[in-house]
Amino acid sequence: MSERPTGQELTEAIAEFLGGEILPILSDHRLRFRTLVAMNALGIVHRELQALPAEDDAERRALAARIRAGDVPAGTLGVVKADVEARLRIASPRYLDRYT
Amino acid sequence: MTTVDTDSDDRIEMREALEALLGPDIGDPVLLAGGASKEAWAVDAGGERLLVRRAAGGVIHRHTLSLAHEFEVLEAAYEAGVKVPRPITYVADLEGREAFVMERLDGETIGRRIVRMDVPEQLPFQLAEELAKIHAIPADRLPFLAEARLERMVDELDDVGEPHPAIELGLWWLRENRPEPRPPVVNHGDYRIGNVVVDERGLVGILDWEFAHLDDPVRDLGFGLVRAWRFGVDDKRLGGIGDVEPYLERYNRCTGLDVRPEELDYWELAGNVAWAIGCLTQAQRHLRGQERSVELAILGRLGAEVEYEICHLLEQVAP
Image (cartoon, rainbow over all chains, first blue to last red; front, side, top):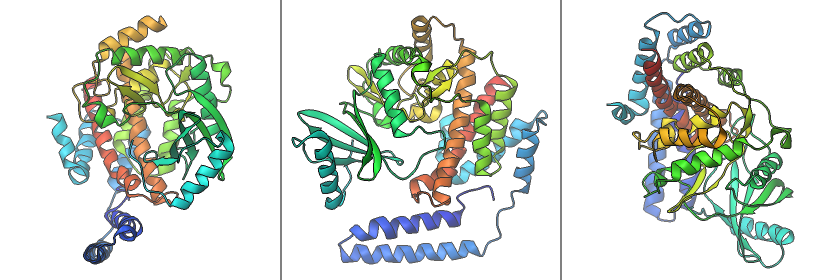
């Protein structure tokens, strides 16, 4: 897998943050309750993601290996940039506005 | 700086440990929010404003200096007249971890606040002048400093073990287009907005020496141009606070070197490649359980921003 943390790993990190750092400092009962509900919802997302097939990164792995070996034909940069842009549209779409 | 809540037990223990070190005339130590791998405690002692830098979770990468060595670098910089907090003492065991004590400087350190401040026009000149002084520190004064090479970045990427074609392409271009290497000098290693103290008069001091090493001087000179360290003010290529040309000209005048803009472009790209790999290694600290943190985790995905910038820079040099 090349997208690390995976979506599932991100839900784990958020759940640990809510359970380990936020919940212990909440004294308001309603907020505590809603935080627990949010953590349950996050658990649903986590299990739903688990049911999905793992990302196939064979193509990306092959491309990285070719570049490492110095095999960089014309057009490589365009292919690489399109791949990064697709990942950014998930990870941080607003960042792309900085280049317009 | 913002403070964080600490258990009062921690604070009482830290106060007792610091009393033993600095004398009875001390105020309550306050843990400041900040670095992941180091703790920073603010404390006043004997009428002086001090900062205690203490080891915490782990290190950012394996070339990070120990606090003992970082303290020696700080001393060497102070002796060389570089604007740094005055180093006071190194402590091998402060409540179970190594630490050192230095002067606490007044001013702003948070990058996104600095780029929105009304900083004086001299700031780029001051950054160039201080860097020239750092690069004049005699390397034999700090014999433990290692020399960095491009291969080090490849090793770090291989440690992560994920395929990142954009980083590979950046590394490939850096190998193919390496300028004539300049004799290595003492590099700060992380010389950028975010690691300096600034006030309305300009540069107050330079912090965070844990990545000091020997390297091409232009490596340090170009690192502050990396887009991530412009904190959103992208049109000011020097750290979101100024233009590059006056900075480069002042650096050349102070050092007697003749660094060309193309060399700076090369090292700006190298800085981006280093930071793209840095994002991945930070995320690995979370994924491998060395330090579980959402902040570290998300860097693994935000590294795509830096990879996009690598592609953008490669388009400029090799369309």
